[in-house]
Image 1: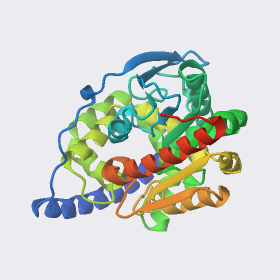
Image 2: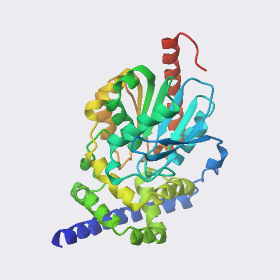
Image 3: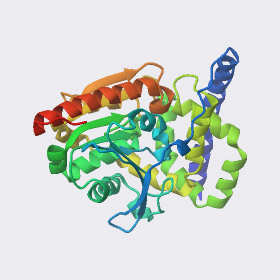
Image 4: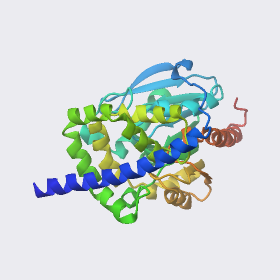
Length: 354
């Protein structure tokens, strides 16, 4: 009982600190919005007309997949992050339409994919899922892999498991706001002592909340203002539009609390630093926002230090959801990577790639 009280007490302390920070950030944001921040144009996932498929992972979990077909031999696979869905790639999907075959999927237990067993909620399984997806929807031809946050970790795990595929078929990799390990050292933008407390109690506190799933889910639905404040504080490094904030908030809210809790220890345990040199056989692009509180710049710097040829871009005023917040810059960088990838494919094949 004493340990439970300590966990809950620590959780309340951390929550209080986070809420205070969120409130301060939101207050500043409202002032800036009142000064004339322009909202984004309306966007909708309905504007895409994909081929929808279900891929069965090795353990039987059903993965929801959407494919924007194209005659190009190149397939680009997009791996989304923790608590999100394939919808997080809206801008990149729109930008790269018609330039390659595009594949998007929801990670297990996220979005429209099937709910998986607790024991499968770890990064190595996500790497295996990516391998299963490749076998089913892109068994042949050149590949480019794009991962955000946990999606980047999925790519690292896949590289460790199947280095021969990386060497023989993968011509480009983009790691956006990701990490190869060391999550327990992240302070979330808090003073170091509070950050250490949060990391120590985060997993047990989340597990305790997951055991009260129905109560917590009702609370999440009735406390949307606080959810939006936290989403904005930890997703964006600048004043994002209301629509961008709502998009991210909706994806997080749609992820069950017990799924969030079950994946959290896996993210803290994640360490693929030794696997990174496998990626040196391909064109690598690493992107991070300078205000990312969840996967800070130092994590991307470590990735680049282990892949000497990697291109590295730090986006000013960018938060963790930099692919939405500063999508124009991310889109342009992916276009540049795509040009290099197609050049390398041309060189390897001796013929043009459309």
